[in-house]
Length: 462
Image 1 (cartoon, rainbow, N blue to C red):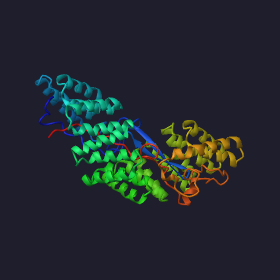
Image 2: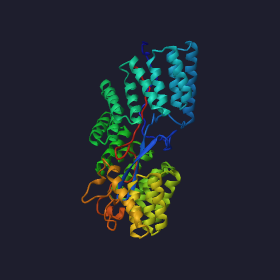
Image 3: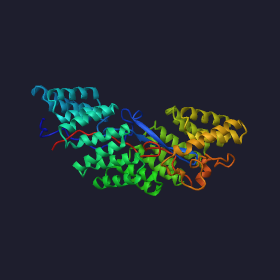
Image 4: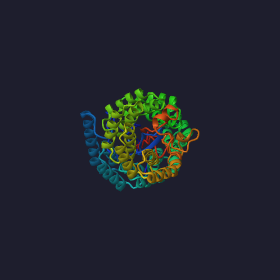
């Protein structure tokens, strides 16, 4: 077993969100994202979920020529070190870290492989190789690399932490929490580990534990923007929009150029009935990230709530252009067309939404209502409403959207047996105070939870 080096490459540090400092998605932002749609009042407001994100400090396109010069100098230094040391494991590992930060994962992997070839007992090279696999989406292989690093050095905190990140990206939340538990045992002041454990709890729908962990993360590091944002998400999931709003405000203070804080605050305002303020925040998110489909969807939803159907349709159409497979955006646009009295286009959008997601209870329900009320196809209406009633409860399991009396329907989406008075549209639900999420936002899977940041870290030995 090799001894750890006296000094090590500095930790990359905790980033903020899955967007770089300029507000543009880094690398595979779109591919690394999945979403949970919150149902309420007939709208589907989106919360974007980031499946995995490794480092937001110097990962991605370099933001300045100085950064490029810095990388070049570091690469020259470590290349010289490799030549002068006849290819030491540590020198290869250090240069691999530079390539990894630069976003050149193939060259990083080559250097980590060379490090292991030079010294098979060098734990940090396995850690680095695992980080590459996380960035490439090969989470199973990443876990194996972290396990190997832990086998060599059982107290390697970052290996447990990064393994938790990989497990969470795979959806193995119990294993992720166990890994974060161990990282925290080894380093009780590890704010990012508390934040990531909170995210895992959120994905499980355990928002109380999530809030506790985010709060601890913020106690350790009050400037950890992802923790204030994540806690805001957890408060939002539990319906505490005032506390969510406060956390989103704090997120914006810490990361004013990141669109996610504005998206979150817009969602909180929307759910409190402040549609004009919500529109302002969604517009700010779009200014920072012009191709932010979720922000267009949510702004379209807010415009519809205000009765501005033309703008609603325009924004929802843009959301569809950016994400053609978005069943929810088609569904929301269908509602807007129905409000305008354009039944033909409404039914086309509901049909497209159902084709993209046959289990989208809201689309089935509202198509059934539209077919029945307009006496278009009574038999199909019965089929749609029956299917929506079957899917409804499961589709929002774990969500407060089912709170309220006499609801055999998806919070304002009207899965009901009485097709004539089945809570005809989101606006009525909003007016009656039954509004909640529906925003395109940031949370994990199916009403579970909150963003998923991945702060894959390089090991540092002081």
